[in-house]
Image (tube, rainbow, N blue to C red):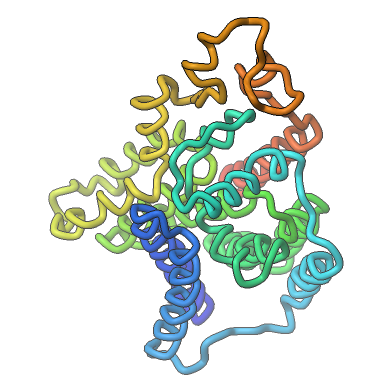
Length: 356
């Protein structure tokens, strides 16, 4: 194991532990309708845990910087400068992601609220919880901090993939640089969108499953990273069968060789960090996983005469009986381009160079 791998493993583990811990803290606080307090506790707890893990690390040289990687530092610096000038956003973020977080802060809990955009109640809680931790101390710009961290972690993971191949070092660095310097990557690192963070958690799960020796630790971190990935972007749930296949067939090793005591606490943790809690609430209380509707028109108002309008200002009643489906084609297109771009890079490396 080289020095780069030591440091990458340390920082990846810290990031997964911190995010999972933040989700647990806010989830407990939300049970008492104290989400704002939970956000501050999660922030202070995350800083404390990072400090503890770094201080307790055996290697005193915490960060490895190489002048050969100066182009990547420039890319990260450009993203940081872009964020300082003005945080970027997608219409989807202003339509339901940020309103979801702000409404939950206002109400003190993440339970469904009557609203016109059904996605505020549809989308899982992970991204709003994570955004809240950085929004409280830093404002709107702070929401991009998880993306900046994810940008650096994704860079390290891609370098580890190329190191595991027979690609010449110079060529491998150019491949990564082309990908990481693309406009969509640089802009995603400074935005309040969640595509980069969710994709990085997916790559972390792949890193622990393919590039780390099979152990209880690697399985635990891979499962937790995959749960966080799905909790941010529930579309990734479709990849769960692939992870299960790897779990049962990796190196012809049976699951009996793993320490099952760990899974006693890992399984509940994975469930909390997954979209399952949100899906369950939406299904059992609002009749649908995909389109939970919390009507703004009460039963009493519906029984009133059609010639009278409920006391909702000048807004006609019929406008509020169904959720408004706001939609951003540009955001949708750019997001799909990012997914295709990442998938093509992985397929290219695996098909031509990687021998895992």
